[in-house]
Length: 116
Length: 116
DNA sequence: CCGTATCCGCCTTGATACTG
DNA sequence: CAGTATCAAGGCGGATACGG
Image (cartoon, rainbow over all chains, first blue to last red; front, side, top):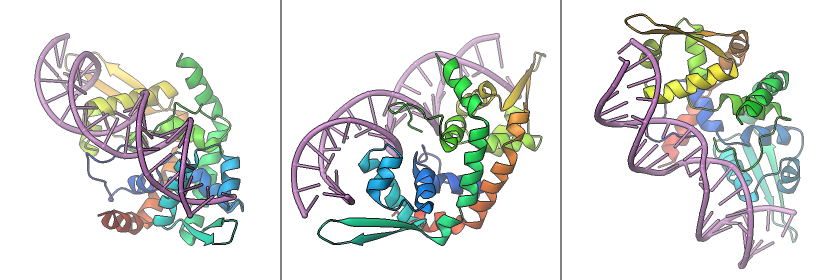
């Protein structure tokens, strides 16, 4: 999301949410981590996304305090993510958005076919 | 939001929501229209946004069926927007997101000051 | 298995100026 | 009051390849 030219408005809850959780995959990542899909490899299998992009979004989620990252420095590298309380607080919202989307999938499909 | 290289996934409710309501001001526009701020001039006063950008986002909201647009072709042009049932169905979600943002404003503020 | 360095395309937002 | 045409900027997602 474009955000630099106009200063970020922390006075609006909607913008707070958008600024923190912009990014195409962030909410999905949080959702999957909540479902015990905690490792990068597994997450990548769930959502077909470029590794670099996924890592960037995960890094931001860590930075903002939505998830914690645990790196095990074993011979075969191992990484696990886990939701923080802040991350957990998003789950109800994610579920609501997901449900709304499922109920209104037809709208998007109509819009897409109409675009041609 | 960048969305072209990977085909849009209508199978995921979160993406349905995101695709339909990407855009920096769409949710705010819907919210203000629900509060009887229906005219372009008034909306522009509420959110300081470029007219062209606002119109584009409103056009998409119309196209996707979230709002209806009424143009009165009087001497002094007059336009009013109104939520459709689909638009109204978003209000609970918008309220939830807004509340979450208000409750967690500090997170964004911390993130912003940290960025320097 | 996991991370990152580099390169690229383009979409979105925003500013300005002008017309009906 | 409302709409649009044009111009500019840069952030973001994606692909590839390489290193630990």
